[in-house]
Amino acid sequence: MSDREAWTQWIKTQPLFPGVKANTRPSTNKYQAHAVRVDGILFDSQREAARYQELKQLALAGVITDLEVHPGWPLIVSAIYTEQPRIFQSVGMFHADFKYTRDGQLIVEDVKSKPTKTEAYKLRKKIVEAVHGITITEIE
Image (cartoon, rainbow, N blue to C red; front, side, top):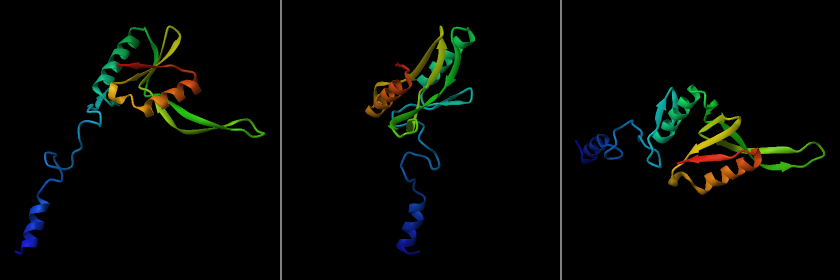
């Protein structure tokens, strides 16, 4: 066996990333949060899953109604004026963590930690609040 063949055979046995098993994905995201599945719903973090369980208990007790997980709103950023009615252009979606009704008032929540309050998130939040007339409550 030549040196080249021996090297090729050896390199095939080495992991691409030391310490990471082959065919697995990291168990955390870029903010070191672990994804959790509760009631068949995938949550980005354990904190978000825990908040869901709290809200679910409140819904069962009748304190809140219309609980919705991961609701979305279009990011409408421009209006084209023509002789026709205005045409709005959506450039993406904003997904909050929860939406529900409490005492007849719509409440939108987003579970956030300090690292996840990025400038991009803050901008999307401002656009959605301004365009759709809602207030997004951040749960820490």
